[in-house]
Length: 121
Image (tube, rainbow, N blue to C red; front, side):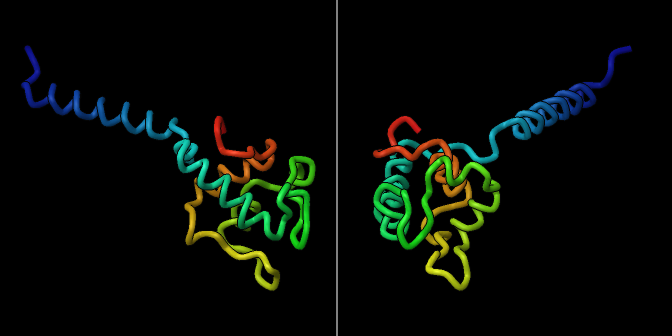
């Protein structure tokens, strides 16, 4: 006896939904920004963050943002600092200008050695 067509359709739809949900869970939850946005973020970091952290990011009013100085810092904490700032200090939050995925991209780029122009990151 053959199952009714509706049962087959429901099984196919459920299978498709399962595969889509699995693929979404496996996808990167914070994909890198598009190259044009990367260049904008690099410029923002170099210009705006550089005004306190030094134009070469080696320190100034704010601490150095170099791979060696960031190596022992938790990623989530650094992303939170970028997004929300540090109360009681000159460090502002940047959540008006970027989303959390972009802040994470910046932190990862800083930890790897920040690019000069955003290309290839």
